[in-house]
Length: 231
Image (cartoon, rainbow, N blue to C red):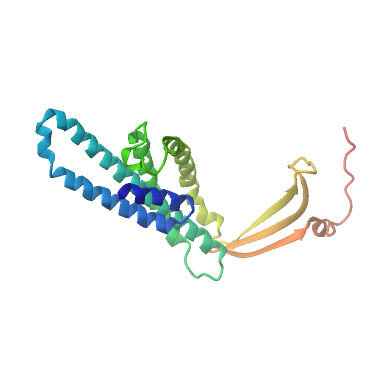
């Protein structure tokens, strides 16, 4: 049963149902942990050489399953905290302090990175038995090979996270200029600037935003500057 619930947790995580994925993965870890404890009651069979290998293999499978379940649970909870952080930032009517989910997210992000590192080091090259009924070996290999890229992404997020309070105006108001460029009309900066936005952040919240036609700003310029002749 633990393998089926772990598979469901993976699917929930892919569907961004983070809370559901967390609960499913925690239940999966509990199921595998109970099975591992029951197995220890039969450790007397290790005295028989022919059975010792099977016993150790089963223990190893359970430990890997528990690790995988905990990794999914921690990842799901971390993503949910970051979702709440972004939602709180964008909803200025929400009184929730953005620093609360952000600080929790940072702690769980570190734990997620640690678990992913363990998973990458310990996951076997072939599909584990407890997942063989639910996914193919090619799917397993795809998931396994994505772990290094996910770890690099999380390392980048962890490095950038301390900047989030500063960027969202905690302690001081921040106003950002956003340029909307059309890459079908090539310009040195990437495309013709058709419009621009002004985004104001204050105390971790989106305070205000405005969109303007670029000609509104051009029309306020005084005088005329003759552009240089083309080369």
